[in-house]
Image 1 (cartoon, rainbow over the protein chains, first blue to last red):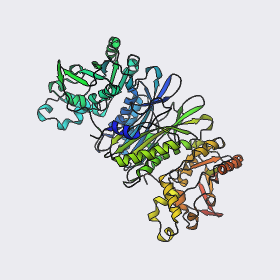
Image 2: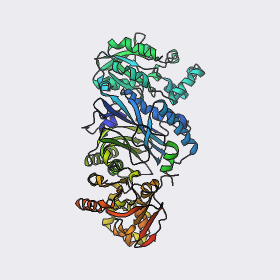
Image 3: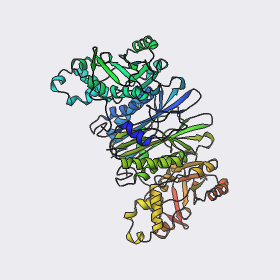
Image 4: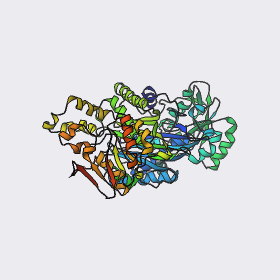
Length: 316
Length: 316
């Protein structure tokens, strides 16, 4: 049973007054006539999301960035964060580096830390984030429409390449350049949700989701869950050429933790979106389209391509 | 170093646009002309706040109730909650009982669960709560005023008596009736923040805090932190007569987890507050007053009384 099934089975209590409850990147509640507040929580746990040797600076950055990603995916501007930090013992070195990373990310994305608590317990970082969303431009997963084009910001695969480096066979591993190794490390430890781009593009977009569980899995959430399917052209998906040369598409598509945005838009907005990508010097691209078949079909160089996995599962 | 020092040292980043940042029961941000949203997060960890044998129903109740308590202490009405649950393996029995307890508490206090996530990791329950607060009646800790009377809702000590039962000497333990044992258990597993009373009383109150770390410790936060002190009459503090008969005042005053409200109010509101307590059939009482001496003086039957501890410390 994965995260989504668990939430649905046990915790999907009916929501009456909130504008959007469980089931999207963030929940929405009223701010004023024109805006919602979007709110989301994410937790990183020792031995599951980080280890004792994880650099605390990057952990501070990442624990906030993955939350910012949820607000970006709703078309929102992140604003406030609350930190709930569990640790076994307070260690000055660790805490000051962690706070520095958190603060750097907060500064980069203009987020204020307005509250939180510290607790004794197995190391765990839980962050709640709140953002503003214009009602007319909210990017809900269920606003994906049939025949929409499917887009991805930037590239996928770096975080997965870093995280699964040790399990890559020696013959493939030796083709990984130092430069790629560095990019993979940065992709894993310092995700950069594309806030500015999505803010400019939001009025051109129908639905969106952040790529946290892997492109393949997150694609299901915005297509199959809406009763649609998708056709995806793997050769169009932006990824480092190493994945193509080594035929490691599955890693790029299912590895997860990319924190890029997967979104859909009507065909008529294609040129405008491409211009915006150029303006932001971003490698994103149109990678396929929403179909009325209730399945996701991948194509690689004109041939069907089958994935053996469909994304990272929390309780696999 | 305790929780408060940790937050202050590492995470007290300056807050610019939020109306109240770190340092109170909840942070405040703007809702509309007349109201704030209040937001708070609390985490319960395995082996520190609960054990493997803790009843999951009550754990569900308590993990939401301790958050509701933070909103009540701000004079707010709890509204939305988000759950971040970490577990090692999904177990149907545990999850369904936990969800049932959470839902019962949500129903009792009219709270909607609007979001959350589940994660693999050492068992941990982190809940974020959002409430509405009238700007004119917000109960900030720093609104405590000199010469205010200090009040407590209901009684303290039950939760501590249950939690520390095994460490109570046999001669005292044998005087604990079955009825008191039951009340102590209920106090520990099913805290009931006095929402309705505080909503009615909030316009009569200056400052407030919820009693989570123990009356003695929480008293410091609303007096010493504001540059004041207090004179407290222990014989006026509502507690079960067992604590008096056994001279176990320290346990009642420092044990914590009462989730009652400690508040201050001007002397002129004394009669009105007493009438409200009567109306709600509540055992709360005026227990002392705010002084200009920067220390807290306890008195028992006209004699000075000295506490050896000053409240539960997270990182003792």
